[in-house]
Length: 465
Image (tube, rainbow, N blue to C red; front, top):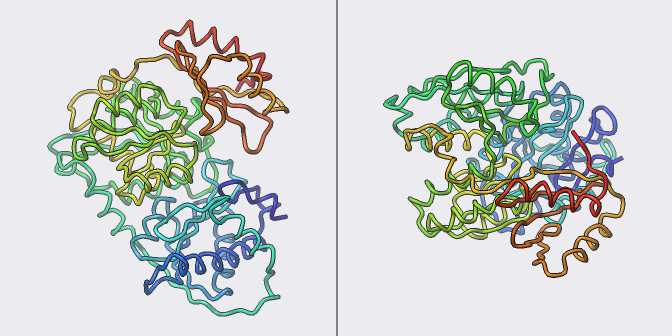
């Protein structure tokens, strides 16, 4: 059963089958064993080195799954710090704020309401995925069963950290917004997810923010629209609100609020790579010469913008495990992915939707001009967007791509990247489906269209959404 819930970088499945409370207990027990072992190996000498933070989202199944998970943690003999119904970045904050051995957020992020899962982090909220401990947790979970192991009676306490979380975040917001000398009108779509709880807790009472709330009610555990801001159809409510209300910008959060997508004052969706280029310029003013991490699918303008601002561009594989590691390794103050995940050193190298919101609000307040104008200098190239191709022989297709462009420059950081001079692309393999994912860019739209058409026979059947 566990093979159906453990994925490459987290634990996620449909509820109540294959993910149920018995499985949640196993995961709690196995995770507690691994986290406490790892804390000791890391030399984590802290009064709470046997304490594990547990947070949960608003899904109907989250309370019972969290209860079973916590029971497993306690039965192993570790101690639970329950921070309640919180966004995933709050769990990351709690791990660091309290000095715990790690934490688990009960969430299925952007998946439909009948899904659930667990995001596991270790000391300092470092990510846990395959290759960094998740496979060991799975083995430990498979080796235990509730009622058949000795219960070591760990303790549990509940903590309300909203005030500390708010204080930490608002210190990062531009002072002109805090004191109201600059006023911003913003539409926020919480997607009936954890942003509906988190945004009022963090932003209520900020003098310079006027917020129009959309889909903030998360009491039912259901979604008006899929809590995935990468799907354009899910942005219609916030887009309409921005245009009708003449807002400064809009934001749509995903289910657990660790990522978001921004809408400019014209109602246009901003590419997360172009937004990173703009944010990096401001960050580098106070951290000259610092690294900025970006995922390898990003527009070439991101690399150019980082260099122009005096920074060091650092390309990363796609995924939070790799992005967080790159930020830690390079000391970068910021990083970002096309998927809407933005990472910040002042958030423990973790991704945070509310921190990204604060960065955008500060950007607009500082520049004192519309967001569309701030982003305009980075719209230098034409992009295909991510296109999926269905194919069984993924490796064969990548070999065919290589053969078709013998003079191209290829790299293999994540999938296969090709620089053909006039245009460049990246093709990645899905971890779970017979799909290849293409991102292609060129200076001219005609070149993009021509090359996508040329690559299609090599990559398989184009999947239209």
